[in-house]
Image 1 (cartoon, rainbow, N blue to C red):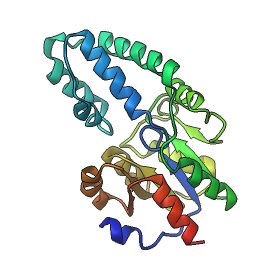
Image 2 (spheres, rainbow, N blue to C red):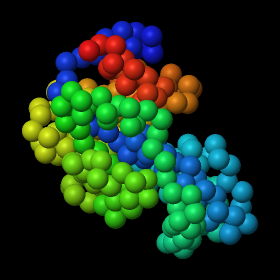
Image 3 (cartoon, one colour):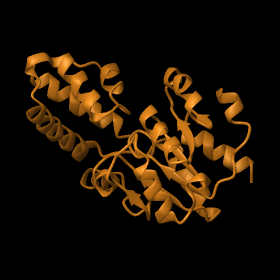
Image 4 (cartoon, rainbow, N blue to C red):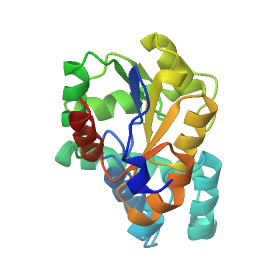
Length: 228
């Protein structure tokens, strides 16, 4: 489905479930900084493009990619401990911002009394820390994190649990995702997968797996406004 066709109509829905990293919150840039800084400590220069390519992939794939890039210098435990130190230092200085259109979209949903939830592959402590630093810890009444379900994405567990908590059948939930892994989980859950991806090449590649496709949450919000 092309972007132009995807914009033409919205399916019937009763709730919205949002991914967090790179979809609701601009966490990708913070993780890129942390990974690149941890690699620099080892004498390596990871490109931003390389780091962006890690998002949405299985954890094992991420580990393999880092191992390939850093070779014998990569020790999983020490690398991630170093990355977390850099990550927290960066957050203390810069915080985390919402993605473009998030506040506008949520305002429309609240105005129409459409329930919404956050469902993330991040564990609870990380998710709540990100929400706190973005000033949005009270924005989502329903938050489902990786450590609350048996299986993370691409399994459907997160979205099924979010739909259950919202008391809405999965088939009437729009799931907003920015990665192939997230779209796969949304499809497995029987929800309506919606791709929100600002990078054109990735959006073009993944749009075939989504019922709808938009460059930003703001584009979706604007469509909702025009459709009453």
